Length: 324
Image (cartoon, rainbow, N blue to C red; front, side, top):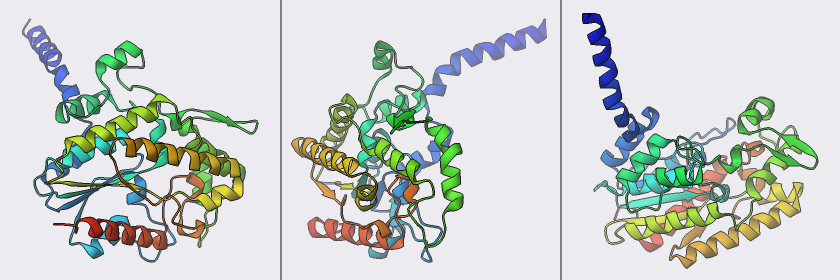
């Protein structure tokens, strides 16, 4: 009998504490969120893997953040691979609560505008409670749209696709069927890729999307809510469009380049219409300044990181010195 009482007690405690599971973010992100709120640097940067990536062929392994540090004592790095605009905006809003941080650099990639409402439920609830002024999705919206309460919509880049008569698998399938082979086959110095039919198809997939899709408008609205919610007198936001390997794409598919140019102008105009000024570095780098070219992710080799770091530092210094 006593044994049963203990079992019932454990079950009851589990049921009562279950809602708390969804209030706290994913365990893998907790350290990052705590660092956002407690970090000491006056400058923070948010964004995807472009911020941290280096080439295996680089002699100088300093990341973009490391090169920016050459002009500043320290920078709080809040980036991680695959960071969506939802995470980027919410991370920026979170780090803005840190009284030490004065400048926040927001790295944007054009492909990220094609997806919205892809957060796990726990992070969605956490950010909803932490950043109520941002135009995030909601649990109610997921229920009404029947998109999946726990995961939301499937990200555009996660879906399978067809290009020039070939059917390509979802992102998980691409990693095992193509990405591993490309990474293993990459020599030094790096080239454009091994299976160039796949490379062309994936660039087309990542960069060619319908600019009128509601995800684009939702991401723009989210960034606008971030911009308006930050006190410009105490914090400075710098929105940066990261470089696109237009030379490689032009060589493979001129039509894809035209799609990129069209989408870039359209998104920039939408942001400008919301009062967001951007530093557009989309077309500043040649093909040889990119690494991991096969993944269409905009990773930069040392020369590319050096140029981008210098331009960002110059831009911020022209308007408001980093750390002041």
